[in-house]
Image 1 (cartoon, chains in turn brown, orange):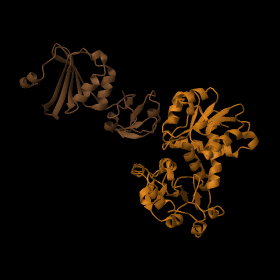
Image 2 (cartoon, helix red, strand yellow; image 1 turned 120 degrees about the vertical axis):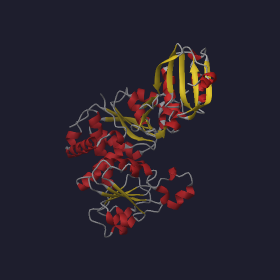
Image 3 (tube, chains in turn purple, cyan; image 1 turned 180 degrees about the vertical axis):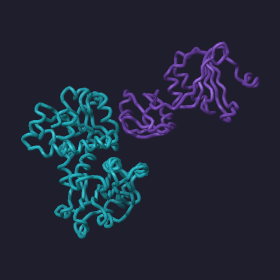
Image 4 (tube, each protein chain N blue to C red; image 1 turned 90 degrees about the vertical axis):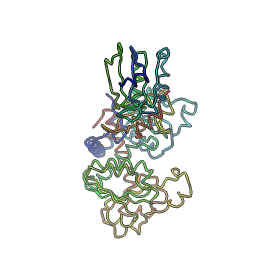
Length: 158
Length: 306
């Protein structure tokens, strides 16, 4: 990171950095983080629209807390797959993981089909399986409707 | 582990052929022997929307196997009218029966029932999604008439856009070898693109035609469907196409002798009653095959294959 960028985004001593968030999605990721009461007291830095060689522009979030709740990680895989999660200790990156599109989303989203039984009985756990490796389309395990990752991301469960 | 039948997409070709073989074995059994196969067993037919034909076919299948039937034929007659959830209905009824056939206007209900219940579930139609017993009985009918499904030339006629029966049959036919499908429909009711695209990499072929007369001349099977009024948001559009493909006996003069006309029934205007008396009418035998195929499926799911 260049000295100029360090001025823009202060380093943290310990915690988690969510990097390479597509520009414009940072606010949405913040809203997701806000769902977790255990992260309520964490100091959070939100950076929007940074220059990025790889992405052109990107957003970034630094949390002085760890670990990230597993369900939050799963939601990141749905909303912005490709983000990098870095664990920081003593100002250094000690672990780095790129969030991939998984084969299955387990009870993270509502079905986009209004006539799917899972929307009539919201206690039912939804499942969406990737239709084939590499695809960004998923199939509802119940009604078999195929939808895109973006459509699912717009139907996150509460 | 219990077995269910929820979606034709869950079945590979081998399983489909196994069900067709089983149905043939069941059909060949003497009635007296059949009637002793499932004594004391109970089928629950939970029909949250009316479907007289499918329900009676399931019930006849079970009764002829020596089992008994309980159930309801529309949700107004069930606890759903009192506000009970679908999940609770399934959890309750599984205490009363050995196997459940469920039909529901919402998609995904049969899969949910299978997840909840400890007893086998048969999907008798979930909304616009699946109706696998219809597909299996259609395949059984094709094999009975022609000896095999591979290589058949089949015209699918009418509402190819909304017909669940057609979508499901198409997907199943792709698994067979070299089935040639002719799609005959008005422009507004064409088969969805994802189904024709699914043929890529298979030996099946599709071609479109607007002429029913050509379809009769060139095919082994003409599979007619009803244009479903309830599917049209605009009734003016329905009026435009409702009678566009009507099959009459005189149109079958000169048709190949082996040609069979099938229809999932109920028909309205799309097949004239004068076709019934021709040797081409196969739809009532198709309905009869529904009972046989459902007998085979019930026996399989109850682990009571003859």
